[in-house]
Image 1: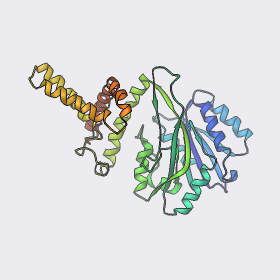
Image 2 (image 1 turned 135 degrees about the vertical axis):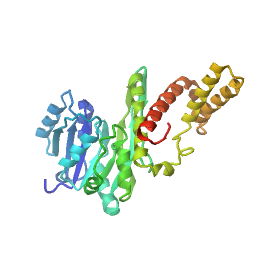
Image 3 (image 1 turned 60 degrees about the horizontal axis):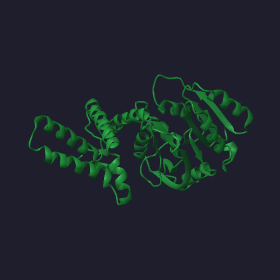
Image 4 (image 1 turned 45 degrees about the vertical axis):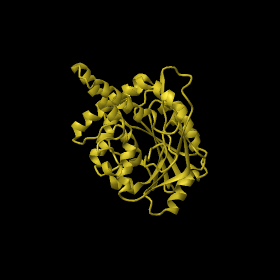
Length: 327
């Protein structure tokens, strides 16, 4: 392992078929095979992930490693941390088990670090592939990065190992958003460079309505992030300093409207108009895509339900963490 310069860490759980495709894309890299290793960190899968990876380890000439992580801590943070702690490279790359990386992925990342010696990290383009047209009653989740947007998402990011150790690795308090939160901490030590030619394709996630609504709980972790990094409240230009987007204004107007309706107030019509206006402002007239306006109007039930759930989660988290941020 003395020649290893780059370690690729892949967390996985019960996705053996897509994981195999991810590994295949890593087996054909233009970067010398003896200079990088691939560490599959299994979050206690119940499928045949372990058997499949170990079979690949016997067949491949690449430095493929496997570790099973058993922990009561939820989320991929502790799995990625296990991979970092077992890594041999000075550069750690992250991708997911539903991604396909470009053939020159590692090579471009290494060259970027050579070009920007002051950089603590490098991240690149993520393109969502596929659709959910053949799956009824499902909601698609996309992970697209096309510019330097400060997301630092783990489907496509590299960091210097020493920097990761210095900042304390991924925060295991973060069930979601741990990659963005890590990026915020690392950015305090030095720049994270966006390289557009660093490319990864990310398979679209088609979630059931139940799963989609459950994932709205991630809103709580956005509030937790802001409580850990209050300086971002100003940097991110939150509306009135506490509203992450326009949706809370729409939700608040709904509550006021129902309240006035119960009180049979004469102001009810005024607030109904205000609520309609808030919805149009938050979800319809968000850009100049006029052709999308009818669809956005028809999405009124879905947007309303999700807005109220997100608002409730963010309010709960704001009280819990003592940091008022409403979504």
